[in-house]
Image (tube, rainbow, N blue to C red; front, top):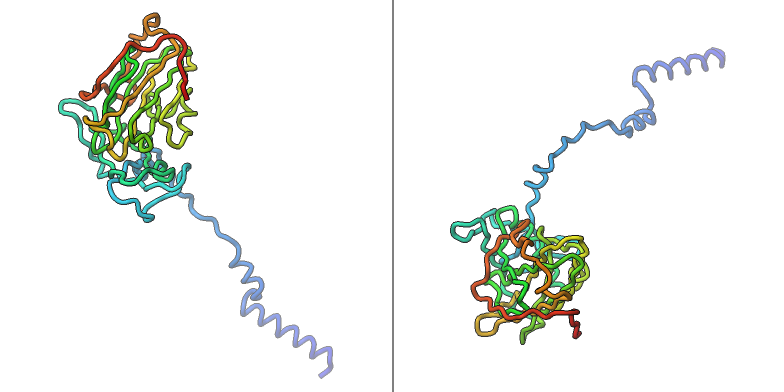
Length: 281
């Protein structure tokens, strides 16, 4: 057999083997590596997304490292919706603020970040209205104490267009308190952002940049329950306008997520300071 005939038979055998066995291993490997298209994922409506992601509320239990998530202000407890049940004042849709675990050591920045009242307010607003105590235009100071076991109380103050107020809380245990300011939707609105950024403000300055009068809602937060009838806090309000010359009677306090529920323990005093506001600090 000549070498040419032998070479022809070898090539024929290789061709027959290729037909019987299919593509080469290199070709088969390349075929397996090619990603196959997946079926499109079903879209979820916003209602489905909300129902699957409960809003966070105040924790009643311990603050262990388990069950926490990273938020824009650091680590905080995950949502504890308490089964979606809240209590109402009899005959109303005004919510009784639910309990938080009492703070027993002086609060740190980490603690204040974890005590997310804003998130609780937003969650509660889906069930009813938050209680607020309207503050009259002739009031320059009030003494009161927070609700237990929630540890906070809200007050509504009317501010004219372009007006500015300064609110300060006083108490012998002032290092355990903080002030917050929100609009009718429970969020830091225009003129409130500087107060919202402070880690633990006990005095806040608020402005109304709008062209019409509005209500601002001040929250006194006392997580250790230091204030009571024997040791109330004092809230002072300084205005840069004369309340006797500015009509704010048409400003509604019951707006957005707030429902009027005046504090029966509050004691008001006046008359309000007039002229330019005084900023002693």
